[in-house]
Image (tube, rainbow, N blue to C red; front, side, top):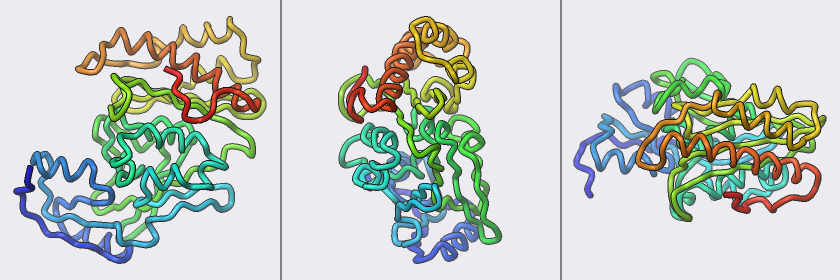
Length: 295
């Protein structure tokens, strides 16, 4: 399907040049991976007056770890995350999430920043960034600010980005020198599919946990009530059952083409329990290898 809509195309070499171009137009669109944007242009869901291609900006393509913070540039792809020694060594749950996104071809182009800018409820990066208490770094012609991931997602396809602002990076603090995680994603089939439901669990020292659900509400949900039940306690069958029983009061799934509300409610309990056990086992030095399907 061809792109019929006309627009200006710019390929800035610096962040300063990019934000100037964003401020110049009424309906600009940013191109990094383009896996969402190109389809939307073809289907005329997006009709920008300019496309700002940021792939040539060196400051937006790297992955670095400094002073306890992982910085993921806006042009870094999911394949970059999967292949990063820094990510696999210090944040293996990020690589586990990245491996579930689309197909190999999609991962070679798609970016985590693009994933969260689309703000669809089934985006894989949402629960991850909420649980890791990440920050979204944005620039405008006048200022730079960091938006907590918990305040980034405002609704279905809605985020906290203001007109003239450009996301330049994601910053993820290392929660502790030792931690483990688990991402459980349910699709309709093995391969390239959107999530019917997902859950991200981090296991931290002193029996602390962080839990976030995706695809079961308009925005990713940090399950603070589950964390309060689990934190500071040894995992037991009774404790896990108590936490499972709370899930139906935390998430708010819908019925759509991919699954019914009732199925999502049930499967989230199953996914939570399996993910919790796997995260705890990984923290203890055992458990399934990262990337192992639990559902």
